Image 1 (cartoon, rainbow, N blue to C red):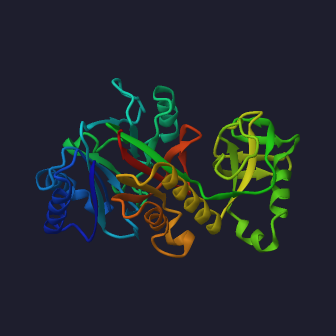
Image 2 (image 1 turned 45 degrees about the vertical axis):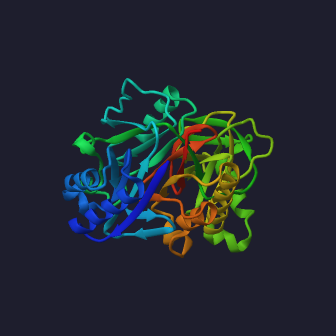
Image 3 (image 1 turned 120 degrees about the vertical axis):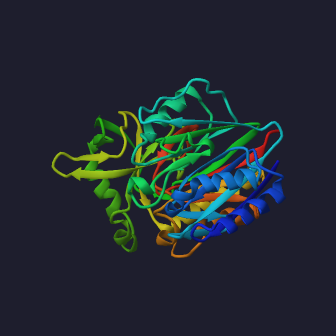
Length: 377
């Protein structure tokens, strides 16, 4: 398997893009797939970009999206003009793409691939609904990707593919055959309090856990934090819903983390950014820098120990991570480089991230989701 990646930091520059494409071709001999993430100011040149990648880079297929910041091997650049590109080529390569419209129709002809990439416009794609359908249609197939990043104006948020079929699409689904796609999904939260069973719920309103008002249980969990952590907890408390009940000792990573949208001390209800069920385990979570660092570090190390270094990688990081969370540049990309070495990598800062938890694909927030691409054995 052959792969290479590049970051180009500049406004649109035809000469620089041409040189980049030629350099990628020299390393790989061309690409079955080029994955490209661009700043919104490149939108007017997407046709030229695709043409250069195909003619000068010998990329047979090109897919991509707008980005709120771009990521490469060991490198993260926020709020910049430019692009990040990954070239992939492998024996027996099969790449299939589908533009998804706002009716969220899963197209006919889906096969069972080695993995899927999904890119979407956050203003137009109901990603949670689409992923539910994909979980039914393609069970146990990992889906990685993200919602286009950038300023929340429709002209600045887009997906694209060669041929222009995806230019006005709500989303773009890419199936890869002949490779194995594994991954790392780091939600970056630390459980607090105790795991308890949801005992009363109506749609997204959780009224009781463990037979007690959910609001009171939340207050108790926060009050149990050390004094130094209570101030940091403000605005950073989430709800963790058990991804599987077949767990004896719940730990970080066993939960699907969702926002707490609001609470009512009188009724005891909490409104979640999810629809949980009676009998599901809930444990509150705190989102903070040290937990996010430790979780990403441990997950990358575990993946490297289990599978070894991938041939290439794609990193989809929440726009709420980066320097704003960690206080230093290049955090998530740097941890991946530490764990896997200088693997060719492209990525971007997203408005929502896709990745599997406990074998099912979900839309996440505040998450780093990395697709690790291996040659099929």
